[in-house]
Length: 145
Image (cartoon, rainbow, N blue to C red; front, side, top):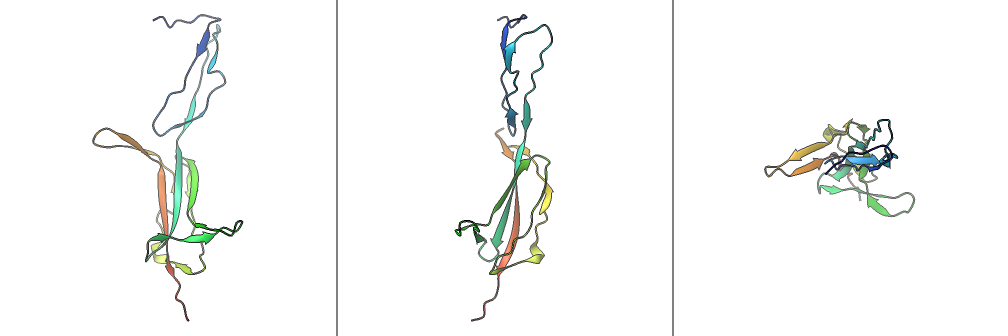
């Protein structure tokens, strides 16, 4: 098949799929009419990554809950930070009314750089590892009745 194009001919390009990458946007010149000058079509991709911050009650290993200040409803205290490969991130502890942060178990990855890794198993199947989990541990405050 002859793929030769001439000035005035219509052309169409398409994005490609890459594991661990998302297309940012389709370029405006992805379709058009051939000209005498060279046409460069650039597709830009990024690698999404995220950090999930967990606030855990040490004894039960359960995620702590908090009250949403806007709705008054009880919800998960988990925080998700969205970003891209090599973005800097910083997390912080929260205060919970009936719990104390265990200072001796502060996470070593409380701040750092987001990363994306492509992992291949024995069968050659590739998966994307783009999530960092950060855990803050708490203990219940003692009650006096």
